[in-house]
Length: 499
Image 1: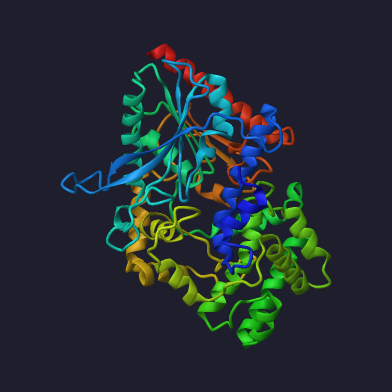
Image 2 (image 1 turned 90 degrees about the vertical axis):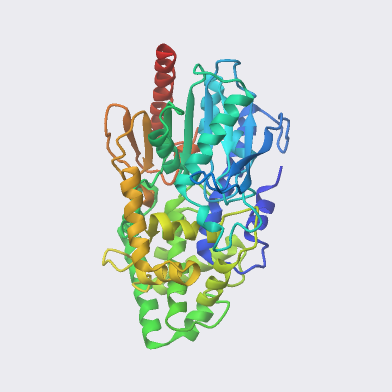
């Protein structure tokens, strides 16, 4: 089992590397899996550092590259895991954990809320890595020609094919009730799998699921601003005021061309060239706050209380921003921050396969072709810099994937038409969100019917319910876990009665 500190180095490519902080924020959620596994072992009473468990089954399923054109005979290998430890044969339920925009691991069937529920209900645990991420991709998969088969629709078809594979492998019948689980983008997939394939999965849990596609996601930073004032997590009005003031000073320096001081004060790896590098620079600074809010108290280094204490206690807002940036760099192990727009272009154009970590190129392609989700700061409510524009992010779709802006707009609208946005009109889905999490703005926050249920958790951030239960969980999270568990038990009981 990899130590947490070593895994951090592996995920970030080495302690001496220079990283764009947006890449770090996307990678940081992987650290939560390690914490989940540590908690898993601790609750079982294993000695510290022990790995006394029966390893889950890891395998690869041959999948069609294009499920919707069977004249295309191309295939790829999709990775999966199976944990039979809790399963009561032959009629126990099946709990499916859905992978997303990063590599999955055996942890996906070893730890988490769904594993605790599987133990309780004697379920077979299965997990499927998303196509084009991790090891589930062909060697030429990231070329412009090949990446076109990456979509949520193809991913749902993969899940249907995986359902057939598992059913045949274990001789499953209608007595084996399937329930799917996912968080963030996989949370949307969980809801959509139930919506589009109701005959395959009986129910779904969709945690922090942004089911409404949004081109200009201005609400993201509105929630960030609100969260920075929330005393429940250590925020305050003074904290938000300091953040606003610090970015106004940075903007003023950028407008006057006083960039050499910014380069020095914030440890830029290279000189800042107007205007493209300016957007990268302020985005990287803003991402410190955005990431801290999104993963507050859920991943190492994400603590709004400490961040606010640091910026408020400084002698000035600007000095506070410097302190926060240095604190974050020290935690990650950065010597400098990469603010070059040209470097971003080079990184997103790379077609070499990396079987670990987050798929940067792949995910940006999905934002261009399906979801948008571009977090901007052109609204007056945003506490950061108006250099963070929609245009600067949409331009990447054209520069990297040759997708014009008007096409991105149409594709985002089609996604909402296809899935129903935040009114999916399905059944037996639990939508779980935390009020601190900025992504809740695109999810389902109110009950849509008697069986499309929304659970809104006070004081929690992104996918908080998905980790293993802990004695330190706030009462609001404990209550939410209980509601989820009760509803899963109720649906499993109703499934048995209708079989």
